[in-house]
Length: 130
Image (cartoon, rainbow, N blue to C red; front, top):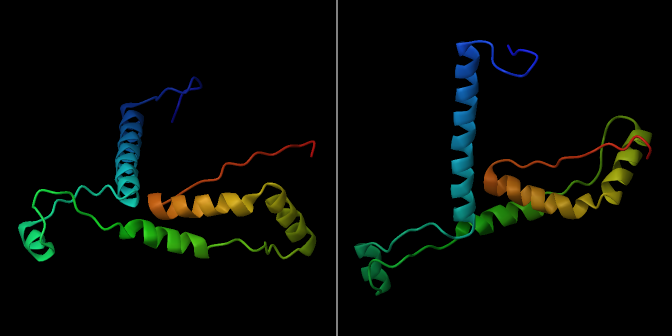
């Protein structure tokens, strides 16, 4: 539990917070690697066997970037086409908001990022006046 000023109250709380922070650091390191692979930066050197097969020098970087093709192929097939809440009026309002916010374009990036990073987010806001 936490005191009203937001500080941990016990060593158990500090241990839990440290574990959460460490988990987030590990996730961040994984995402950096996923993004590097997606960009084709896999840092793989040509092995002696592969160099002989390809008739090239060893010690050169070699990578065929299939990651980007796979992620992009998946992302381009994902598309929100409507909402189904059980109430047609609510569905229409949600679809109107979706279109006004140009989410058709934003969803493509979000789907790509989710495939590349393992997850992705869209942060929304509410305007009481509108």
